[in-house]
Image (cartoon, rainbow, N blue to C red; front, side, top):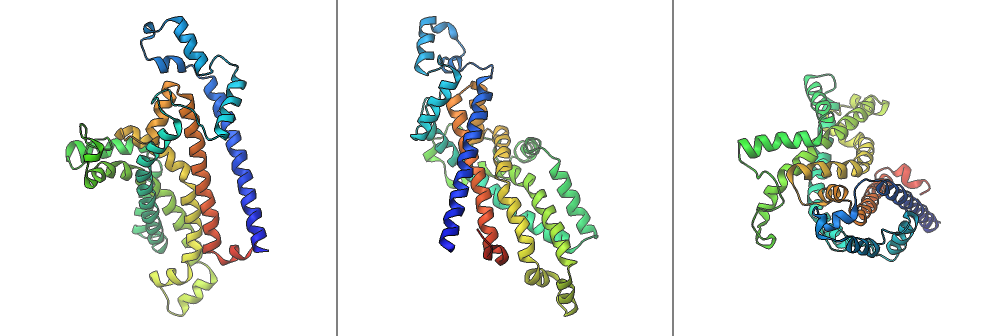
Length: 329
């Protein structure tokens, strides 16, 4: 019976993902179709005088841009089902290779920021919940409310001004030193270029985790079974560890894995501020230059990325909470 439930669970999730990808593809393609940007001009460059009208028509026909929009969408969809996302007009390379290369650069940034924001947010939430009403609680809440209303790009600019321009501790931007081949860059040098973008992305993600963890811990500490544990002499972190950790972990896990979309959106801004050569910067460049194949490919990839985060959160729910694990999948 368990295997049958697991199979049904996988089928339901697969149908949801397929439906989501189709809906996102249709909406994205429609919006891009009404964009004023000309992909042919993006492919040729700023100087259109170098290309005759006949050559422009040949380029338009080669990329299939002379066909109706509906036909263009179905042609693109058939290629996607065969595993071909098309060729990037901007980078002159297959979209799948461009996304893979850029995502590897963004992965280190998003992973480090995601871990930092989760760990520090969870710890701050526990401390604030345990010290409810004290100056420590007010300090942490004020810190979190300030961060929650702070744009990522503004935080990045502040960090650049302080740690790069004024103190000179970290480079201003880029993923590697300018003028140095990628294979010649040391690991420590890559880390130095990663610190400020990751710090920018993690600082803005701490607030939500901390505030939700704090509220859940306060509810747990006011429950009857915790009062009984206090009457037996338990207190502090021992009390939270024995009686509250599972309960406060559930909302933190759910929120943090569901924040993959915010993480990706924040990475776009952080990479722009620091000129970090990741997938976020590729999104902006593809949008500004009218690179339709690359933009649609990144949209599909980001959809799968966010869906995976929510799926992992659902699975971890069943591991953390035995009540959910015993229920139907």
